[in-house]
Image (cartoon, rainbow, N blue to C red; front, side):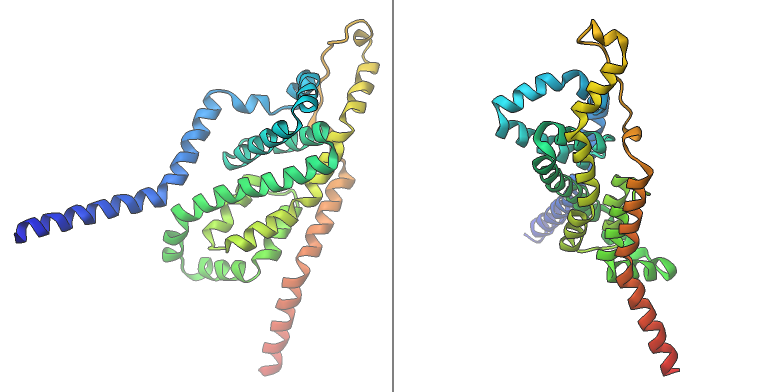
Length: 269
């Protein structure tokens, strides 16, 4: 009887250990597997302005016939692209502005991008957050604490200033145990300016395509002539400077907090 109870306890312990590992690593493994499959199938090749230009008339006809379905499909595609860390988020945002207008396209993009970022954030925090915090010490521990104390401002800065890749900012806060609510709100607010800027570009993309076709003599006789667009050419230095200025503004609260703390320590000494 005792042997049976011991054997049963060992099985339960083994089962719970396996369940715990699946709960911890399962989401990240699933995302990694789907990411590898997507890249192997070439899904990321569809995320280009050239592809959008080639298929824009068909897409426009589908939006006209099935508006709600296409809008939902667009948001789902955006969530997957962000969660799987596919390149081409700027392309998708431009596509949203072109197909649904800057207001609806921008709003749908903000929500979808925030949801997709939250998926990879939660998966990363589940897999690595606890183990990293347990091993952290010294500077890493102090940096982690400082990041959490001013998480909203720091995340807002990282989202506003286009210095680091979007996927990297999705992952790093999870390693420092940032609360989901703070992460979600900072992401939602932080991507608003850039998202609507790209959506505005998308809303005016037809005029850009028409101008490039008019400048290409071959397009006078061939309505299906190819037009190549470069995303980087659509972003002006003034637009980037505006993002940097917004990012600097987002760092004012923690800077004032640090100055106040320094003055307090100086007066007490």
